[in-house]
Length: 205
Image (tube, rainbow, N blue to C red):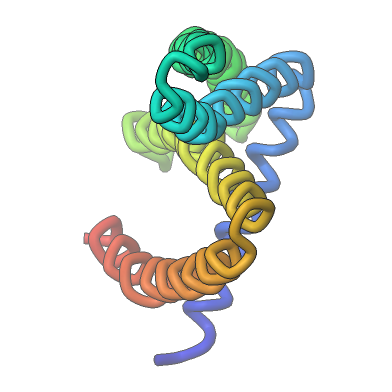
């Protein structure tokens, strides 16, 4: 396979992410709010197994561990509600951010198109131009969800879980780190070398 398509795909990804991050920079408050609530939500979800273990240990002690069991149960209840509340807040934040970014993209894109020459408009299909702009806006909507709702929490869960496991069982944490590295390398290779060319060909057709 030629190296040129791979470089072109890398350029497209770099330009697309740079374009998205520049628009995020215009709404730093929304981005900061989303990331904070996602960090809190993910952290609460990661600590549930820890308190579940403490609850099990307390129950095994019988009456002597009643107070510890109650405290662990209350902590688990609060930690379980955390992801629900903060997760919904993150979704609403992403909706607000995405709507503002899409509105800005659409306004600026049509502003540039309307400034083109009369000859360009006479020799171009208006429906095709509008379709390209709207597809770009929809792509940003999907990209926001993937980066903020998918990738960012996944990185937090993976890194946080490895830290917790390394703290309690270093060997298990090391095994998880090695397995995660192999999985990430495989997914990256499969996505860039197999899925991306197939998607490019599909879009071209």
